[in-house]
Length: 174
Ligand SMILES: [Zn+2]
Image (cartoon, rainbow, N blue to C red; front, side, top):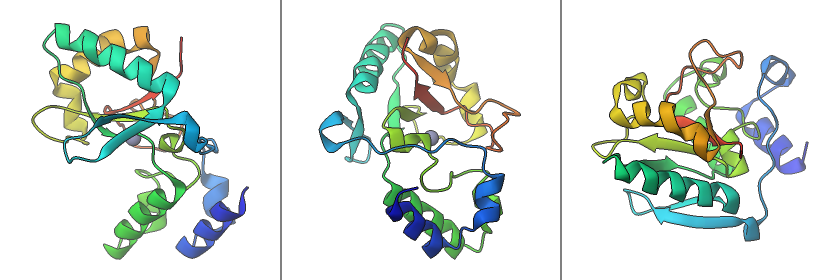
């Protein structure tokens, strides 16, 4: 494991037991030149993916618009250090690492590091909750996303120890 990750884990108090229990795959951060700003998200922040995923996302998005479905990105590429910040925020709220890791991957193991994962929200609001499965956006994704190479990573009762995440889609290609 690269030294940046070792340092981040040490800093957060992540030990060998946490890593042994982890069932997610180690993800490499893409090179800078492989990343692309795809669009500006609802908060005015750049939404970034690797180019293959970016192309597929834009194609999927324009297909969805034909059915009046507006797919809004909430989060795409995320760095190891950003992941560390997210976890620190939850630790400050008094949550344990074990509890946090059912929702947020150990730095190094988030699919968002690959630049191929997208969290989708509806045009009304960022709905990173199970309730997203009742949205027309989710319904459309379940029927169409595979045509564009996107797959739901964490369905109900998935083997990865991650909660059900109807909003989180990974580009796996065709
Ligand atoms: Zn996600």
